[in-house]
Every structure is written in structure tokens, then in C-alpha cells.
Length: 121
Image 1 (cartoon, rainbow, N blue to C red):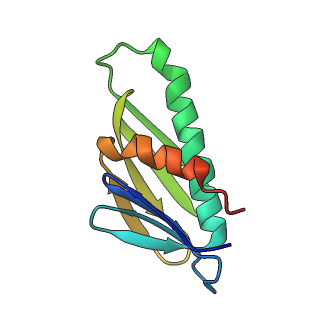
Image 2 (cartoon, rainbow, N blue to C red; image 1 turned 120 degrees about the vertical axis):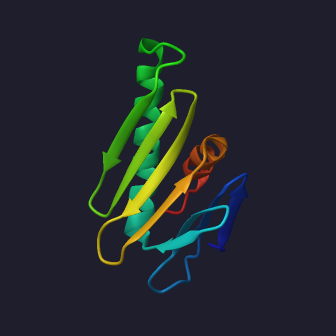
């Protein structure tokens, strides 16, 4: 499998199967952090879980109702904050080395789609 780097407005997502320690990459417009295979798998799983949770509660919310929704795994934490159809996303890597990053609302649809399409496992 070849190296993959997907990019969009305000986000980056990558995979390098030849990398020894850090095969994954997540990033925003002006930041990036390398992830282990397990961390990248967890990121993609939690991102999908968060997107699904927001989609399932959206019909119950008023259009202008603000939400904050977080999911956590063994190695990282994600939090969505904003309106159901326009929210930012925050990442904290909380095991081993530490890292933090965030994506603006305009980046979220593309990031969600790319994470679903990144078939590296």
C-alpha cells in the first residue's frame, strides 16, 4: 500500500504504511501531529462515533441550539462544539506524548468523509 495524504479546507489526514512508529497523520491548516496505527484507528472510530451521535440528536434540537459532545478512547479525546450543522472539533492526544489540535466548522464535513474513506486497516 502506498502513502496517502488527503487534504481539504482546514484539514489533513495521512497514512504511511512504511513508517516505523507513526504511520498516521492528522492536522489542520497550520498544525499536524503524527499518530501510531492504533491512535489513527481510534481517531477514525471516535470521529465516526461523534458524527453519528450528532446526527442522531440533531432532529431533537432547535436549529439555533448549541451543543457540546465529547467522546474518549484509550489514547485520545474528541469534542464537538457549536451548532448541530456547524461545529468545531477539538482533539487531545492523552497517552504517551501529548498533543492538542482543533478544526474549524468548515473543515468537519471533509474530515469526516476522508476518515471514512481512509481504508488502511
